[in-house]
Amino acid sequence: MNNSSQFHPDETMLLEFSAGTLATAPSICVSAHLHFCSKCRASLLRLDQVGAQLMSEAKPLELEDHAFESVMANLDSTPQAPAVTEHKRASYPFSVSKLMKNNLVSQTWKRLTASVDVARFETGQSEFEVALHKICAGGKTPKHDHQGLEYTVVLKGSFSDENAVYREGDFLVREPGDVHQPMGAQNGECICLSALSAPIKLTNPFGFLMKPWLRINPM
Image (cartoon, rainbow, N blue to C red; front, side, top):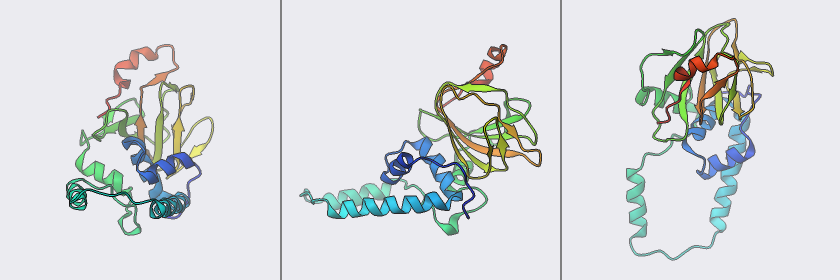
């Protein structure tokens, strides 16, 4: 896809993604962003090339007999992360489509608030809840703070808050102390991929009444 993103993962995240050291949930979000963003795909390619060059210049180590056969056997039995290639791009990023097909905990959206629905994924990790969030056209989420890290990628439509307008492909990072109130665009629903390390905290004095609905379930 052509690059239309205004907000991107930083260089450190791309470097960790290239090296394969970025945690599972953030990796899913970065992969989704790469589906939309030619700028970050180009940066990732450069990082991959640098990594390949460093590997080629590294001093080889002596290996035990049959080490190669052992490595190849492990590769055959280990699921590989899908490559971000042009022919696999569809309406949703390949990684998200794969999760939707195989690991959607509920096959239907669940109502979170009057304007927001959620569909959670099972991702095999315990640090972040990974889910789709859908804001109805013109809908507002409650104003809230963050108690942990939150990564968000806009997959469809757009939303805005007090700071900016966020469109398809935009990659956002929220940290504790980031208070905002997202609002869906008037011309259609907005669907985002989100990874939350902790529940949000409503700023409304009666926000505690919604705490049972705001719990997260990393899985």
